[in-house]
Length: 281
Image (cartoon, rainbow, N blue to C red; front, side, top):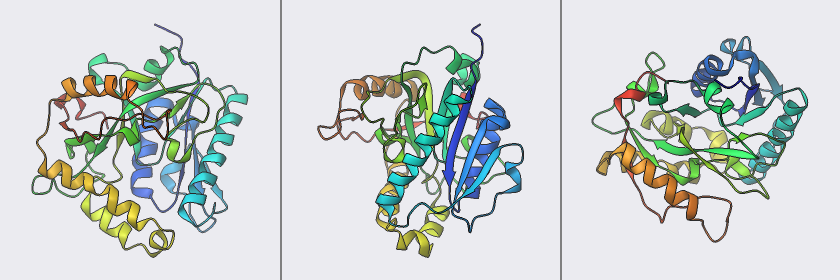
């Protein structure tokens, strides 16, 4: 077995304690809470008591208009990641609070062991899975059970195949979707699970949040909420077969406007999660 590397995870959050609580629980278990770095966006925020044992900070609000704020947020997080490398970290994970990077349970190893075994030049990308709520079958998402015992369907999403894992200082683009000046490599048996649009009630609450509307996020939320419709209406495909195909397609297919991002011919493939994932998150 390879020697475990020193791995940190960082995120920036605003008004999203529901997912951040799960983020701290999951990454704390996988990496150790002392290796988690959380930045609350705005001095009107309060650090949750569940962050005890992590490195959590209140930071002045980074802009209000959505595009400028997102660019500023990722510039800030890229700089913080660079600082972590100077503190002795070998790998830094950058993700939003509703994103969880997991290793396929069939390998029977944790995230730290998996990443320690990988040769990473600049970055490593998990395959992105965007979860929705299958209306009529799945109830409101609860903290009392594992997320994957409550949500069983996801769209294979190029937006969430992100270079979230880096092994040297670099500059993430908005949303961690790319690294400026570098290509990406999609890892085998590694997934980024996005739950931000996996609950109709949470989406409705976000659309009722005046701050999000003022920032210009309403259209973004409406657009991404299509995941719920897709998983409700579309036939679910075989997970192992289609994730294997998706890795190949996304590795070779690129949008002409961004050659360092993955594409998938606009395919909307819904997969059903295998039972083996049920208890890991």
